[in-house]
Amino acid sequence: PPPVLSGPRDPLGRSSPMACPVHPRAGIATMSLCALLVLFPATSFHLPQASRVHRTRVLFTEQQPSAGEPPQASTAGEAPPLPAPSSFAEAETQGLKCFSAGDYEGALDMFSLSLNLPGSGWDLSRTKPAGGSHPTGGAPNPSGVIVRKEFASVQEVQCAKYNQACCHAALGSATKALDLLDEILGSGFEDFDVIRKDTTLSRLGTDLDKLLDRYEPKGPMDKLVKFFS
Image 1 (cartoon, rainbow, N blue to C red):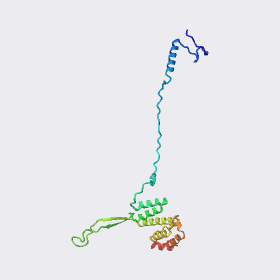
Image 2: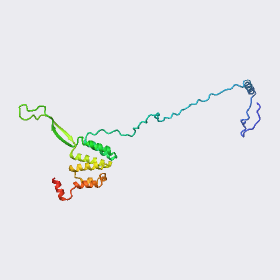
Image 3: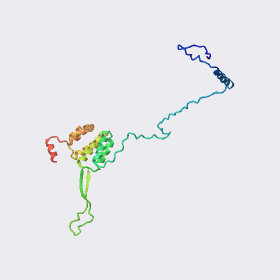
């Protein structure tokens, strides 16, 4: 049997990793390999390394304006402009929205515009006839086209001017507000309680009370005279 190098043994009788059998022919091969390493000490063998994947992180940043270039205004969240009103009701609705939002000047513009737009008032008129007299003589020729013209009614005018007065009061123009209230009271507006309870018009103070005293009936006889007048 081949010789066995002495060394520690495991409990099962097997040779430990430090004790391995060596065959005579294996010794010759080992000596040949050692001779080659001595003759060619610079020879080396390199195993191919696993290729590496380089990943570049690209950061997307907001483009900043160049020096001297004014920043562009952001349009995110902005509501589109409302279309121009074409009737008294549309202008009044936009004016009330502006007033509720605190835009008293914008509301004043809408209420002023409503006075020149078609409302619930209307009238019929006939266009001028093409010919003058009747062909057979007699009465003038009644031919022509009947045209319906629409405009703000008396009540709508009073309402628009009332709202204008509220805008002027909110803007601190007491004189303009009182002049408008004087105008609508003179045109027949009689809802005095509405004016007195209006929190915006209350800024006019005692001047408002004096104005209402001029128009508000004081007793039954005043109310009767006001009724028949």
